[in-house]
Amino acid sequence: MGDFILTEATGISRQGLGWFGAPGVYTVDQVEAWKTVTAVVRKANGVIFCQLWHMGRAGHSDIFGSQPVSASAIALSGEVTAKNHEKKPYEVPRALTEAEIAQTVKDYANAASNAMAAGFDGVEIHGANGYLIDQFLQPCTNQRTDKYGGSIENRLRFLKEILGAVTAVVPKERVWIRLSPNGAFQEMGCADNLETFDAAIQLAASFQVGCIEVMDGLGFGFHKKCEPYTLQRAREQIKLANPQNTTLGFEKRPKKTPKPPKVTAAMQPAKHHGPVR
Ligand SMILES: Cc1cc2nc3c(=O)[nH]c(=O)nc-3n(C[C@H](O)[C@H](O)[C@H](O)COP(=O)(O)O)c2cc1C
Image (cartoon, rainbow, N blue to C red; front, side, top):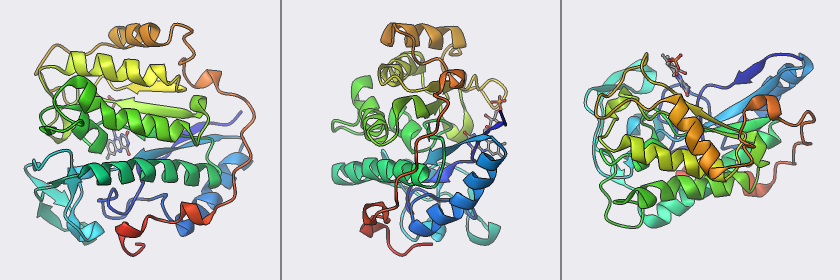
């Protein structure tokens, strides 16, 4: 068997893709372009997953044409690489409305369907490194007072809806997730991260996804706001939530890849995202 490849983070929507020159998987053209990549990997007997990404506040309006969005209106400090590699200060994001959260969940499902139509073997939900999902999980970036903020259960609701939507369109063993409970990158890290990520890992395991990738974060920058989250602790949460322990990792994947579905009109980008980039 050939190698396993995980793509670099790939935008799920125009609004989610805020890095100059990064790939997306939300338009028919992008799906067509990815088909040439997945075909080469398949020919070499390799396996390739697409990492689904919404940058939230870490993007810039120069790239997607509108104010960045997040759980709450809290900006990153420092500078972002905007169009043509120009450095610009991060912008203050606006908090997503509940209706926009529902649309973003649909965008994840749309991107996941597109990825399978493009010939990927599966998807990984990028829930790490201070991007939109992480911005909802951690209270330093989520100060909402509605059902998506406050308690851990509320902060996990966005992720829960995404897991539900993505596992509805991709077989659950082909859905992975990446989390970074220790990461300081993009000014993340909160005092209750042990409890938050216990719950997040249990949540992901309860969906019986194929793999929960937990970055130790110690090399990439540790936030020091609480004790480091250990891999042993992560394994215990998986056992608690998924006693059959079907969340074992990639070696348990089914051998045969499903036939990619046809690209349909439903896979076109959502109208509110404006013109295709
Ligand atoms: C330039 C650069 C690009 C990265 N891109 C991604 C990415 O697209 N998706 C992702 O999950 N992690 C990304 N990372 C994080 C790395 O995958 C990795 O987790 C990090 O460098 C820490 O290494 P370690 O996990 O071996 O400790 C990136 C890191 C760097 C330095």
